[in-house]
Length: 183
Image (cartoon, rainbow, N blue to C red; front, side, top):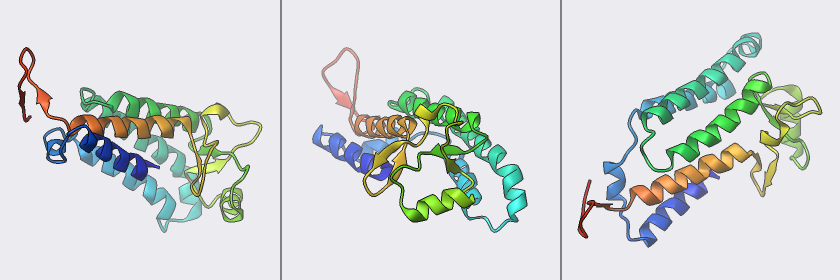
């Protein structure tokens, strides 16, 4: 979904007369925070660590990765779309923190492989949504064809990426004039 919104954001920016080169001028600072957050989450999914160690530390590492993302958003708060991205991440964080460090996923309509992975706990980032799931409405419950489930937070995050890209591709207008200059 994020790939599609990235493509749509760039396409919308281009259709509005923007240029890719303007993105470099408005690139977010501290990108290593996002990279580190995603590496931590990928490590929970693919790290060849003992299962007992992952079960013990995965919820803490998962929540810590979100704290890194919040720091990134705070440091880049003046960029367009960052508020939407941060709000989406906050919604995801709330449901994850309320459910022991995992994102609940509605099992309805999932493939047999995905159901099995959730049932046996092979995925340390996601777990099955149950009647006891807290903040169920923020969980991965929205079906996406060919993708499984997404959350309301994922939609806001993707919308923020779209907004940032199409806005950042535009030339900056100098206040009080009709001219534009590159920043």
